[in-house]
Image 1 (cartoon, rainbow, N blue to C red):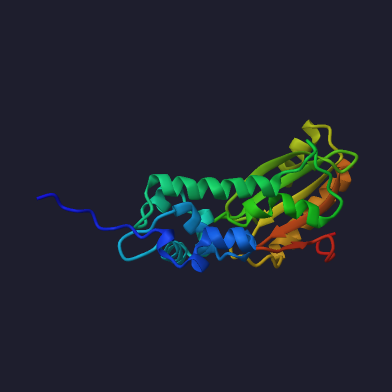
Image 2 (tube, one colour; image 1 turned 180 degrees about the vertical axis):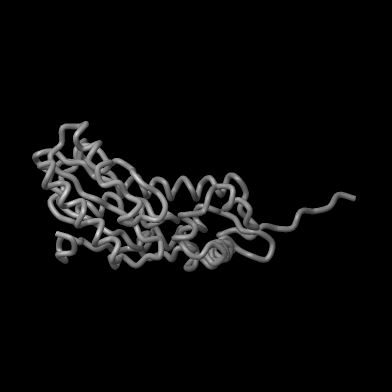
Length: 233
């Protein structure tokens, strides 16, 4: 006797007004919940759960969209109802979002404000599980030449060698930089160590005739400009 496979629950099993694809077509993607957007990538559910319910469970198990962003392909595919192909589609969609957030029509994006700098790194840095310190290197017109990823781990004034931060700037014959680091907690409030480190970097920049334009602390969906708050400058 041939054993029948349990039925899969498809998006088409939902009422037409509840189907994510139809809702996206009628209302636009911004009207959909995170679970509905994931359901469109999953396409089908499993026995007892439609695709939207699988998406809801996946988000709950991963700790929301931020947790899904952080999770590896292997971790995503371990969840019930999400095999390699579906996990790959989800991670590919997230990576496209990251690249779009960092995209600029010019080869050398120009930084005119702290918000401009934050926009280029926010998507990627807010998902990092450890503290990272990056240096954004700029030319005389405040165009980005390069972003150097310098430190990973606990970022404080005692473990960062300030002189190393200027090395890639000097190598590229640049004139200014912006320091960026993230707070994995999601709260971008600068710590006393952040202020002490900023002060040391600014002083070193004056000695080297390299402008330290800002130090941004990146949190979840927000950031702090230490220059604007007068912390360390």
